[in-house]
Each structure stands twice: as C-alpha cells, then as structure tokens.
Length: 214
Image (cartoon, rainbow, N blue to C red):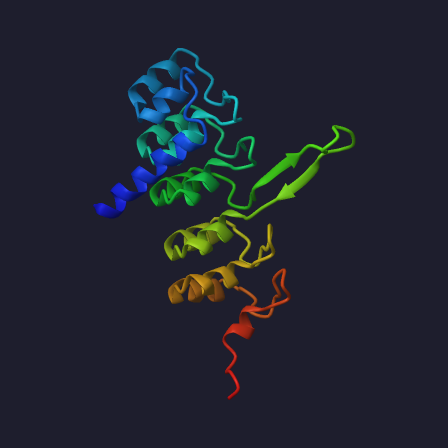
C-alpha cells in the first residue's frame, strides 16, 4: 500500500512539474480519473486524440497518473496508444517511466507498439536547416532500467527487440544487470539477449561476469 501511495504521489508531482493538465474536455477528467465524464463526452463526439500545448492526449495523462479505468475507457473510445507528445514519449513510455506498472501492462495488452522509442525533433539553433532527430530509449530499455522482470516478459511476448540499443546505446541486458534483478537477466537471456553485444562505451554484458584477476 505504501509503495502504491508513493507512486501516486510521485506521479502527481511529476504532472505538476511539467505544467499540469490542460483544461480540455478530456484532459482534465483524465487527470482526475473521472472516467464517467470521459465516457459521456466521448459519446457526444469528443476527440480522444486531441492534444494540448505539450502535445499530450488525455491518454498520456491517464498513463502518467496511473488511472487504469480511465485509460481503458479512452482506449475503448478510440484513443491512439502510440501518439508521441512534444518530448517524443508515448503513453507506454510515460507509464513505465513513472512506475505505473499496471497501466503499462494495460497499454501493451490493448495493442500499444512496444518497439517505439522516445523520438523527438530538435530545431536548429539559428532556425535554419532541418531539425535534429533525437532517439532515446525503447520501452524495454526503460523497463530493464527499472528492473521490472514481469513487464519485460510481457514486452518481449508482444514483440519487443531484446537487443535494441537505442538512445545512449545501453542494451536491455546491460541495464538489467545494472538493476541487480537476476530474474530479469534470466528472462532476457532466454529471449535471446546477446551478452557479447557492446554498448555505446564498447563494453559488453559478458565482461561484467568475467572473473577478475588478483
């Protein structure tokens, strides 16, 4: 119970720090977990994929704050689980990052693309030329960073690449080993993780388990 309360408090603080919820017909009730109002407004034609100034849909906020039933209602109403916000994050990435395990599971079960990494465009400093594309972690990398073997197994079953190394180049296996969760390491190895694959530093997970010299 205390762990769930801590996650909920952290999510609320996160929402406040990034600007809070927009006062849209679905955004505000999504923040409040008011799925009854959302059902009513969806029935009246509200757009489930409308975005606010941060590029976030109501589903982004439901994912951030762990409102499971609200997210389910939005998905049933046609919300796209793969929309990226202005920071390049899908609802799945947000749910994983904020520790909303059950919400992340719901998104995967309901068809979220488990291969989509963080991806955003960064405008050129002088305003000329094409924007730079920044690619960050995949859902599996973020999950392994958090040491969640249950969600990792679900992501793999849904088609996540066990050897994807987007972002800073750390593989899921390297992140899992850093987390200290031996069950997670076992899950990845059984799914075909390559211990010999180097990360951005040129290091491999295999090197971490080699015996040290005297």
